[in-house]
Length: 349
Image (cartoon, rainbow, N blue to C red; front, side, top):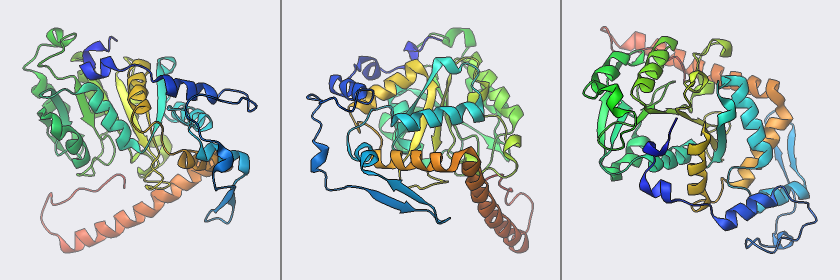
């Protein structure tokens, strides 16, 4: 794909930050290196020495002095290298992106940080934006200053309707929008699981239809999926993500640990085509520099302690907790609400 049509002029103008690029190199350098550029403070003057975090199962995450240095010092913008590798391995395991070699990943300060940067990368004032209806208010708040022209797509108990998406786009001919940069939709935003605020989830057949339409009209799909791990049912039966069916490299996926580890740690990650992730990295280089280093190290050490088996055991427990809450709410709704179509049964938290 050619990605230039999706980028705003501001995003096209971004260039690598020299000081950030040097810091990225530092992560690969010998520990004996005395780094005299980049404005790095001398870690000997930090007041923190070591630490220990007790988990609910009684085990502890020990932050020894050397690891504490990684927590307290500037780090690479794409993320703490051990965590980046863990997240890439997890993404491959869960989604098996068909063109993985052409994709990259950046750790962000929560998934909304990544979403904000992605929208700022692609949306200019007055642009069209295709969204689910109703749409997550956080996304609308990001978009509001751009005064976009919304194409809201109606849905039902199974989420966004592909027929409605096709109808909304029918004012354009697919062959006319492939390389056009103005006055055509370029971005489709969707919550595939537990759509906020309706709580509905897209079944596999609709995802496939929506992806086909996005390909036909050359749309980038912003797959905002913070509730992936709290879908109800066996993980092997989860409907495939848009990332997993992305044969065109047109999906940017936003994942989060907020719903399963901690919302306060502010750790999410963005996966997508390398040319687009690169633009997000360049933005991050001059804004927050990198996601919170202490949080990144804690998540990385936790994943290392747990391993895949422990991590999925935890997500299964989170899922079971919210399933019990869903069932209690459903029982109350069935008891106290009468009449057809007053509520739908959520398929995840």
